[in-house]
Amino acid sequence: MEEFDVQQSQIAAEPERQTISIAEIEQENKTKNENNPKIINFELSDGKKVEMDLTKANGKLLMKARLQQDKTQGVSLSVFILSLLCTFNGSRLSPDEILDLDLDDVLLLETVYTTKKKPLAALEY
Image (cartoon, rainbow, N blue to C red; front, side, top):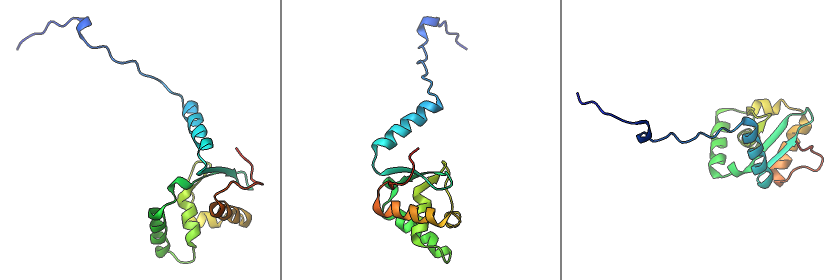
């Protein structure tokens, strides 16, 4: 076997790794969201923070919601769409969990989706 005489200067230096904190990532995402009118942030009456991402609202989402709706009975298409577009405190809720929310909050979710605007009475976070 052949031996190689390699000097330290011949070895390519590893590029310096940049570290980014979670807080920096969250701030960057918040800034992107604030500048994107299709991402709407508001709070429900129980304090849950909602992010409605309307950038995902397209025909594929509608077909996905219809397929899910066909598997269950009694849940409206709009609630399935809301379950696909919204996160609540960073997590998704199932359509049944959305229906378990306070009536005013369910109506608020549907209104925000329909008007594509942040509700005036909703609190920003």
